Length: 232
Ligand SMILES: *[C@@H]1O[C@H](CO)[C@@H](O)[C@H](O)[C@H]1NC(C)=O
Ligand SMILES: *[C@@H]1O[C@H](CO)[C@@H](O)[C@H](O)[C@H]1NC(C)=O
Ligand SMILES: *[C@@H]1O[C@H](CO)[C@@H](O)[C@H](O)[C@H]1NC(C)=O
Ligand SMILES: *[C@@H]1O[C@H](CO)[C@@H](O)[C@H](O)[C@H]1NC(C)=O
Ligand SMILES: *[C@@H]1O[C@H](CO)[C@@H](O)[C@H](O)[C@H]1NC(C)=O
Ligand SMILES: *[C@@H]1O[C@H](CO)[C@@H](O)[C@H](O)[C@H]1NC(C)=O
Ligand SMILES: *[C@@H]1O[C@H](CO)[C@@H](O)[C@H](O)[C@H]1NC(C)=O
Ligand SMILES: *[C@@H]1O[C@H](CO)[C@@H](O)[C@H](O)[C@H]1NC(C)=O
Image 1 (cartoon, rainbow, N blue to C red):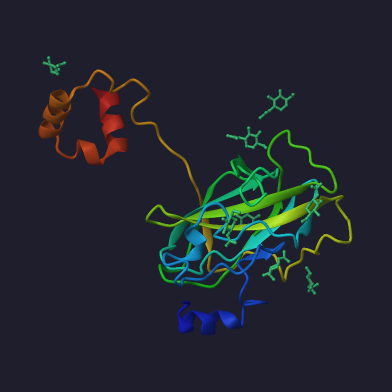
Image 2: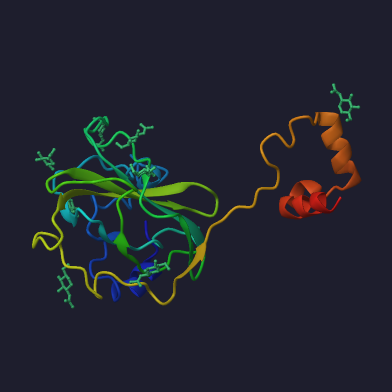
């Protein structure tokens, strides 16, 4: 259940209070925690517990806008966000079997607090994966994955049918349904290799533990450890 404080503070800012993917729409309200979904419905891969729908929304063959509200649950002071697409009908619900086709580089969201918070994210031009061509009338599912600070992921999807850009059936994108809230920030995600593949292969447990005994913090500061290694 959503805290009433959250509902009160967001009621004014949300065009329709039960929307998470605000543009171009979503499969349906999956914000439930109940007997059927004791852990909360949105944690269920691939689409937050809602099967393929037939009330699809139209979306451009050249890619288009995506807007969503990421703060409906606690634990997202920061979050990693992924946007993927799936096609085909081989899934158990006759939707896509695999949603493993990224549409944007993953990025980090900076939220105002660790509790539920209002606010919306707008990605004005989400592209199809490299070298993908979709034709008007083709079906697909767009998936948004939000990884909480503890590593578990929330899922939500929208089922789309592609249409030529400018097709009047594609819902209009404007400053009302697609904008970045001022209380949200963003950060890039990158990694630093601390040990290339094979670097640690000839270490055995006694070698590794004697190393840690000499420098107990080594195991906890991989970036620094990598730097020290370079200096040796
Ligand atoms: C599809 O129908 C469900 C159930 O009525 C609704 O919650 C959802 O918003 C609809 N999705 C679209 C894209 O219209
Ligand atoms: C796309 O999905 C709709 C139902 O949502 C279905 O009627 C239609 O036949 C599908 N189109 C294709 C090309 O599979
Ligand atoms: C979703 O589809 C699967 C496979 O057909 C089915 O077992 C499951 O009960 C469906 N879930 C819901 C919530 O309808
Ligand atoms: C996932 O789907 C894409 C597009 O349909 C396909 O090219 C790819 O091989 C699939 N990957 C797996 C692991 O099935
Ligand atoms: C919202 O912020 C994201 C991340 O910085 C950016 O990619 C996107 O273009 C912004 N949306 C708008 C409407 O400016
Ligand atoms: C896209 O297609 C071009 C031309 O066929 C090819 O060289 C390139 O490797 C492809 N890129 C990806 C990511 O598949
Ligand atoms: C923005 O577009 C939506 C449809 O997606 C429409 O209902 C709304 O009136 C538009 N708002 C403005 C200010 O044009
Ligand atoms: C484990 O590493 C230590 C230190 O390098 C070495 O003396 C020892 O022989 C190694 N043991 C095995 C079983 O490889």
